[in-house]
Image (cartoon, rainbow, N blue to C red; front, top):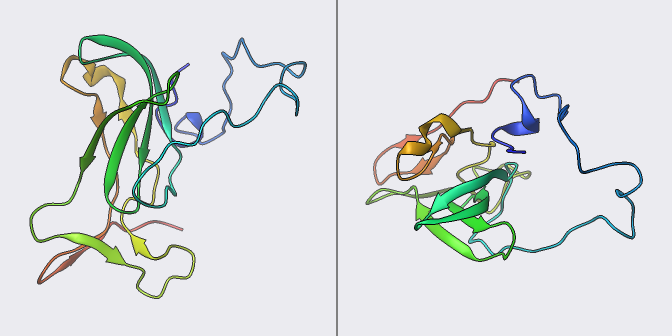
Length: 148
């Protein structure tokens, strides 16, 4: 089942009411847990997202997407751990923002929130990925604001 936004749905419940594989019997310390560590170029503060059966380079993959505070987005094959692609969201003259004195997000701030994937856009080279990010430019600073 695809995970295309934070906590699985726009209500942010974290529920997956269509789950058919995970049960109390198989979610336990002996049979359930971390299966991979996927290398990225900075902290990942947003929730990684998942699309099943996505076509990448003419092959179907189950894909994990992660966005880093270094302003990169990664796609990994969820089954093998192979990096399928990486893209930087930085334009010429931009760098990830420093921490602006924030002790919770350091040493840099960029893609902090969980992005959203629009699976309906799959007909294009990649599904639509919508991150909120912060970066420093040579003369200006651009920021996404977050409601509290």
